[in-house]
Length: 147
Image (cartoon, rainbow, N blue to C red; front, side, top):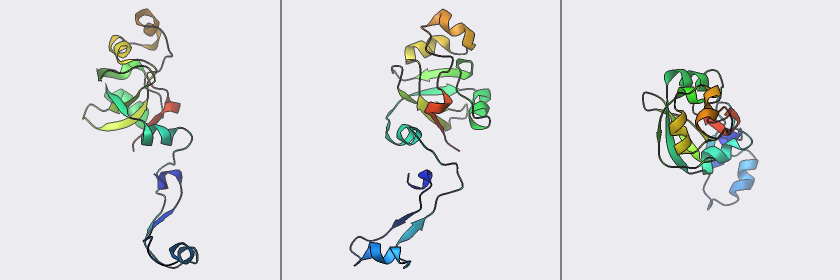
């Protein structure tokens, strides 16, 4: 988690005398973990990915996978194929590819019951089937994509 924030980290023995002072002086103790080349996650996204319980799974189509992974887009109901689990709007859910790979996690704008009624719909059709909470199933600002 620390390295995803862009912070280097050392894991060293707590029983080593003056371990912190010695590390700060540059002594080679423990294991150093450097931030990777992955994009850092900031704001509310670490909270979403590291602390919230996953309450359901949204199976999405290949087009939605590409939109999330390569284009930085939000998840729309048109890309939704199946809803698993029972949850309310505001729940943390997993987005799963057609191959069964978990590709993202995020906070949904709709309950599982509402999502079951808008699977595959265009955004303009949502308000005909459920109360409108936004055109996105999960807005990009409330989603962490695994890459």
